[in-house]
Length: 229
Image (cartoon, rainbow, N blue to C red; front, side):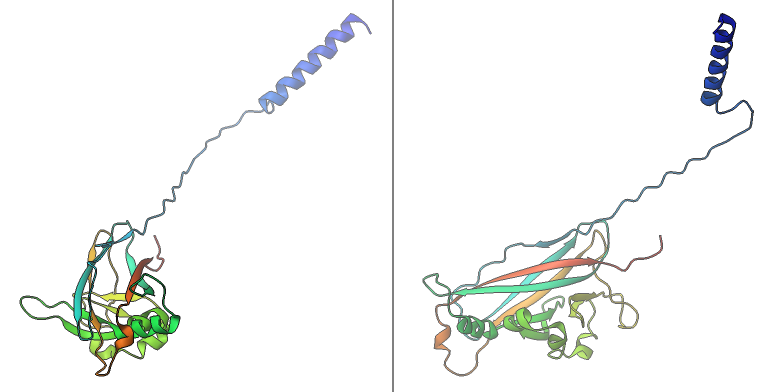
């Protein structure tokens, strides 16, 4: 091949490379627009104060023990309702586990009374009551049959067990159930007032002497319904 032909081939190759790099030899106007989206999820942060209640020792049938919890929503999202999971274990005076039947019998005689926290020097008002055994073992549907919901709904600012599970807080600003039942707003708190009562059956309960029941309540807060943002 002559030198002239070699030079011509080199020029052609260089021109082709410039065309590929430049995207063509034609000119045009252009513009771009960029959009950035951020998706940041909120948080559900439910705390209870106190985490450990004062122990209740040396109990006898007929004793009662009022206790108050404060549920705190320290997250960024509102809590629609709070689920209450109940677990217990029973041991004898030596610290040994008792047979399941005796453990359940003891739990059936320890009653949880849900209270309406009145003001001033007035006593707490018991709105409904269930045993620890029922709280731990009954379905929400069966539990609801033990409660006079109509009476309970006339009291604002209390926790109400609802069909399908969990507890809803009826806020004081709503007097009618049809208007609103809500949970705990982000950054807000709600009292959870109960009274434990050792049921006196009027009969001998000697088989329940010297028993210790360790109760664990787990509160779980759930988000409100999704909405257009």
